[in-house]
Image (tube, rainbow, N blue to C red; front, side, top):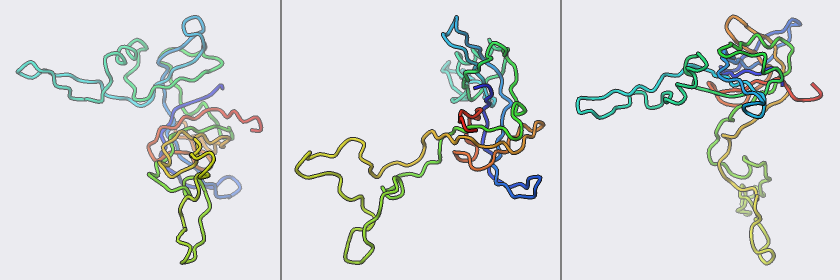
Length: 227
């Protein structure tokens, strides 16, 4: 893997290519990311580049008249992470991820990674947390078949038999059942980059990308061999 960047999902729209064909695209605010740490084989056992994305406020602690501490930004960056970012010479970041670049040694601390590392026509893999669907039945969640829809069946969208009553007299582990749907890490492979706006750090990717709007999306050079 040679190229990667962190992005937030803006939404979907459609554009026309040079041949006048309508293309549905997902707009991604890709970067700018900054290098916060460079991992080497000597120190960490592997080579990787750690990057940060989206500025985040520091955790501010004030003391009142009674001397008790009052945390103003409860979800701000703590002291340990603040020192980590200060060592790299960058501002505090909300998201921190690392990529195993083949050329990790060529990067420098505080170096910016922008959307222009990709070009139109590149094939990428998009990874994000999918939309949450709440508690769903086995038909919607797992695609199981429904029962007869006649009035007398009284069995329409139930799950059906879970196991034999005599042997093994139990339900096997991994049996597909109703439950929470969505909110899992999903990767869509081999998406095409249709357009790159280097000035606004925007990537227009053909098709749909997992996750809701404002979701964090990891864009990597595709690993598909047929790309």
